[in-house]
Length: 608
Image 1 (cartoon, rainbow, N blue to C red):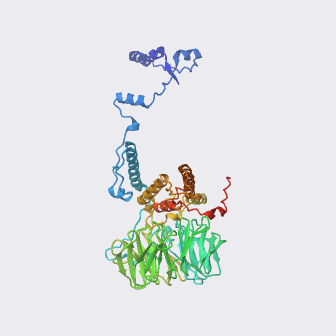
Image 2 (cartoon, rainbow, N blue to C red):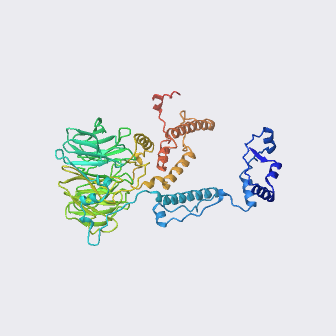
Image 3 (tube, helix red, strand yellow):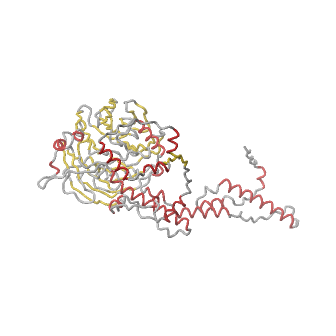
């Protein structure tokens, strides 16, 4: 670095006394003569060098943070990297909303190293909870509900009044599709809530971007359609036709025909396991892995016709409703139901599970509606008597329950934890309801009827904020490809589907102890003792040396056979003491016969 300083002479010339300036000014006033401006004369290089002196300055090297700390400590100044700013405390409600449960105390840890490591881990968890609670300020949207005046009820508001009161973008979400020729219809929304799939009983199948009203594809399969289901991306969907299950792309081109799945009535897709669960008319329940195209499991439930099916998003367990009022829960790992719940004394008409896996709603032909706690398999928490049989049920992301009775749709708010006196909204359609489903991340309820499809605006039903890394309604093609690859890498194996998913992280202590004890028994196992007495062929008395030599040869042969059996069995494959006993029993001393010498000898395996 180069710095420039003025010479001493220049500095002295600048410091002239003020009196001299005043005298010159008075002389000018007396003469009343204006001084003419002299032209600027260019100074030579020597004069500039006389005025300016060049001094080269070297920066001192940095001596490290410790030196800076000592220097600041001597000056009684706190370093900026250790200075902590006071932050506004977070509300307890927000912290409880993001809490991960009670932490570990570390009482059983003996070493100081692991105690310190555990404390650091717990501190990181608390920091992440606090950051997640603080990040709620950045959420752009909030959920809102209809609020009526004192003399009004929210049930009185019609869809036309709601659509005329909201903004233009929200008003376009209420529309009707009149398709009277190919009904009755069934519908399904994609995971990000952007695309709509409808299928008519007379073969009409269509995929739509319902936000922009853009038609992706429309085909007629010329066969009865019983159900439709989106797969992991919006470029593939499954259609349960009269005979077999077909998979199409978003242009309506047939990709696969799965003949092992015949006469399918209902379908459910498990996005984190890449499994397509199907229920057939003949009572068969199947799980198809669409990532590799193989059947994971398929067995007969022995429960008759399966026309009621849903799944629990919390643990990926499939729930089936039966004509005896029973709800069964199934996993692809077990051929028997994981649990059976007697929910009603009459045949079931519909069932659904909320998005967080806490509550299950069931309806029967006796016009009863019950809400159950799926986590404890207890209930009913609430019980309602309807004015008609509920043929369809659907939970929203915010806990609103939609009930379809004939051609009437009723929406109930806060009906699980406490009793609801009256419905939140009511809407009457022209035809009977086929099925209905809430659109994710939108305040919309889609209803498929006998003559088409209707989209209803339900304020406060959808989650206002979405995670773009989980489900992005505005994702591009490149983002969709990356999300598909990432989800395939994070795919969960079907062996992990259980009622309580937290059991996977636990250690079964009794089984572990049995395995350790079994390995110890095998490692310190001694060959069985042999009580062998050689025969005296000639009848004469022989010496003890010959007898002892014969016994030693027999014992060595028995020991070699014992070691060989242990190697063939394998220590790692033995998991209980019963297998140890069976291993010991297989190595017992064999009695020799005189005719054993005529048996063919075993061929030795060639070493490869």
